[in-house]
Image (cartoon, rainbow, N blue to C red; front, side):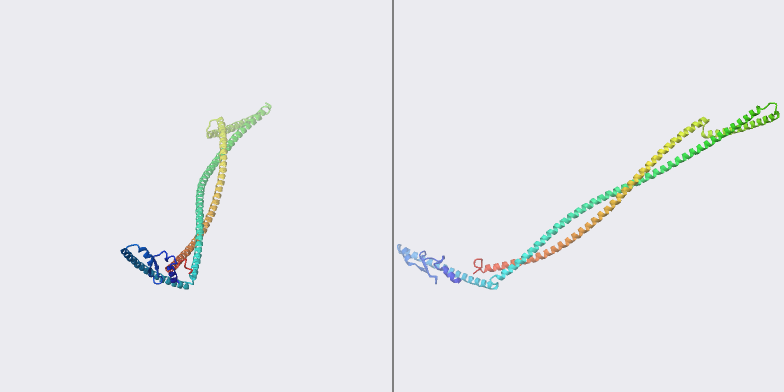
Length: 413
């Protein structure tokens, strides 16, 4: 059929053929020998001289020879092309028979495309999972950073609280020391006031006892003197003639009693004067008026000391109230410190739990990421091999078809 098509293409009816009206020569199609149109040639060369005719004839013969050679070359080229077409058609038929008119290649191509589609889908899903894992990892990193910032903030708060607690303890120790000093001063003041009171009371009791004793002695002496004088007056009022003897005896007794009373009074006065002198010496004065003035001054001094003692006691009471208030504040600060320490421990435990949980999640995501990367690595190798194989097969088939002269226009034939 190819030969017939080629022969039909060389006929004068084909576009490549030459019509009898437009060509100088008539071609023998079977033998490819040009036939000289002598009628036309004679018409062209008849008017010229004989030499010109011979020259023209020789030229035309040379042209005929050259054209014959060209025709032979074209005929050889045509035969070669016909043989190549026959071989290509044979190879095409063999390929069509082998591939069932391309169905096997198409099925394999479809299977490869489906496999590539599945692998691409799996790769896309793996990329999506990887992106999700990276987003989750970034979110976890942000959370970890926030937890770290919170931890640093809590540590700063804890350090400030520890510093405040140490300052509070130091202030407490200082205040306790001041309280102890105040209590010691208070105790010393109480002891001093008590000693002063006891000494004053003892001095007042001794002075009162001595004064009462002196008053009693003086009163006794006065009483005895008055009694003796009354007795004497009563005796004198009796009759002068009667009882002379008795009067004499009474007078003698009265005189003796009076003398004895005077002696006792003198002794009592001497004793009182001695006691008063001793008391004045002890008091450091010279007279009773000075002693009374000194006693009044002592009373004023004692009142001033009593007032000062009362003031000291009031101050001690105020100091005790302040100490109690300070102790309450210290207890309150200690309670707050214990509460803050407990809260810090709870926050620390929660932070440690959160960090452990985050570390577990991070390790889990790392494992999943490694698995995804391993799957991607395995898929990438297989996919690249498959793509290379498919590309090689397609290139070989295309090259084979192209070498056979098959294209989109004649693949159906």
